[in-house]
Amino acid sequence: MLAQQHLPGNDSTRIQVTGRYHYGIVVPHHTSMTYLINDYSRGMEINITRKRYRQNLWETYLNKPETGIGLWVSSFGNANIYGNGFAVYPFINFRMFDAGRFSAKYRVALGLGYATKPFDVETNSYNTVFGSHLNAYVGLGALLNYRISKQLIINTTFSLNHLSNGSSKKPNNGINTATISLGTTWIPNASPEPVIAQQRAPLDNSREWIITGSIGRNQAAAYNPQRYWSGSLTINHVWFRKKTVAYTGGLDLIHFGGAPYANLKFQNMDENARYTMADNLYVGALAGAQALLGTTTLYVNTGVYLYKSTPPRQPVYARLGIRQQITPHLLGHFGIKANFFAAEFIEFGLGYRLKYRTNQHRHPST
Image (cartoon, rainbow, N blue to C red):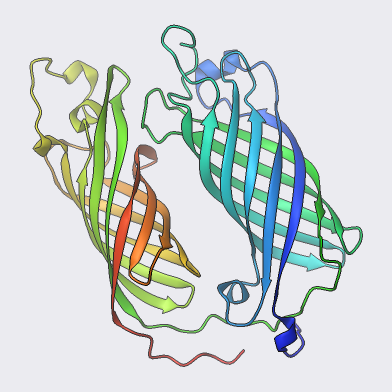
């Protein structure tokens, strides 16, 4: 991209506000939903977006994406059974292209959701998608914008939205919607946007250890209403490649509460069996990648079990989530532990970073 020489006066942050109305379908991914869905999914979104213009920011290294926070409200195709959903989430809009007044982006969002009518054995037994009010929200979307004026943009979006509680309480089939939206964006600052020279992410060969401890709650099986404590202690070694990318490898000590109830078939259960903490323990080796977004890190890992007292449903597992820097050494942690594609529990915790080698590369030319 051609860009003018960066000047100190180009440093700035712009805020914009977007409102959208969305309309679409609830995806009937379980047979029972096919007969219960009798309406479309409809609702609204409000987004507050931040755009930063300055050299040597992670946004500049990644082609200047937008970040922000959003509110999502939606119906789920049957108000009497599934009710409505709400979500609050941070998001990132990555640039795809700019062509005159048109621009396109794709979105990744992860946040907390709330379902108004979860499963209740006496009053709402047909709802097998939500077992609890509190859920995790995941949103993916493609956005097309058309700038009408310096302060007004109209836009349309195709979005996939998912709400589930990560098996913290059964039933938990989750719900998925596919929607198209129309909206407008208002930009308070009418002055031209600064033009910042394109930068490549500097190389980085730093090394560090990250130790995280996390806990969560889960219901192991629908036939067993008890909720268990789960958690993990993870040691990761991090190899940085660039200021925006790193790779990891490490070990997991996992306590999956109620593992025998989750992993053994009901017909194979021994009703007289007594399980101990050892039956819930697993040790795994994992490897993955990290996207480094300033003080925020997105990670995804794949692991294999090295030790298991109770056989897992699959030999491999996945972990994904967010880490947020609190101090140079202390990290906040939110993640999902999944057995292949089935979530086992959502976890919250803290981490400690120990960097033992700092970057020895020079910055590449811009």
